[in-house]
Image 1 (cartoon, rainbow, N blue to C red):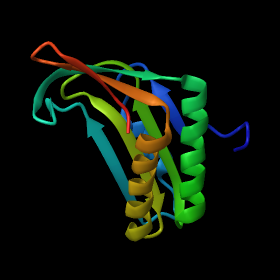
Image 2: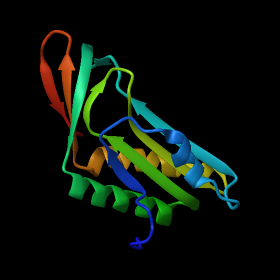
Image 3: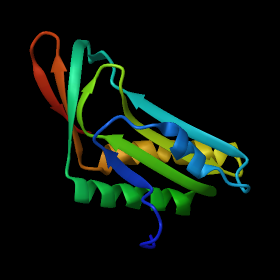
Image 4: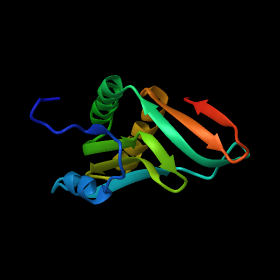
Length: 142
């Protein structure tokens, strides 16, 4: 990635607006757009969740996230892609991760979007600390 290009992957400590992120992916070469939004849900493996805390190693997470998106740009015929992942305290219902992809055709957009979220969850050093309504807690990472 060139130093004058904005990051395609970033961490966010606060809520963020997806409209400008989507807008940045608009391009005359793109005929389609696919996105994924991951929200904090109220359960995990049969246990009621009251909220969670994402912890990240920022320098490594951002570097690995950029690598994932660079791979998607090489593997799929897409115009551009972006991903933002929250860290810190999140409540049930809050947006935790967003991925957006623009491409000439929908198949590439859908494929790249799926690839990015799957790889981010598998490789990027972000850990989820869930708090359960029964008082228990659990650290989760794929």
